[in-house]
Image (cartoon, rainbow, N blue to C red; front, side, top):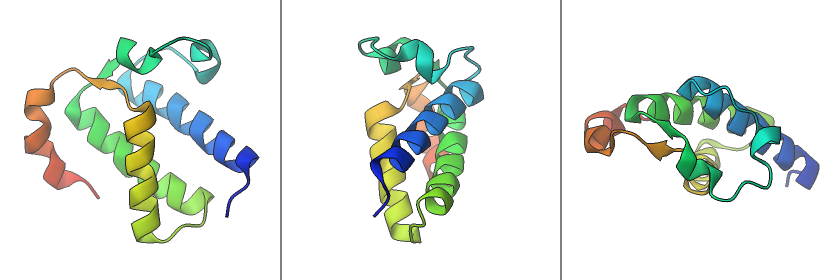
Length: 99
């Protein structure tokens, strides 16, 4: 099991990467203490899928997880910290491109 510090570093890295991939000039440190920050920023469905692919690989490697566990943890991360989708009507078109 990964240490709490390691998990915190992974979460911080992924939040920063998510902002970067969505084109926002914001960092983890800037959103600390901001309520519902993940609803204030958006990304497209295509950006979300690309981020999830990146997050899956990063989580798998950083936390030494197998495929199934990495997919699960990526889903939990997205559920907890994923940015609001700007075009949810396109979600079904891009979901088959995940993993």
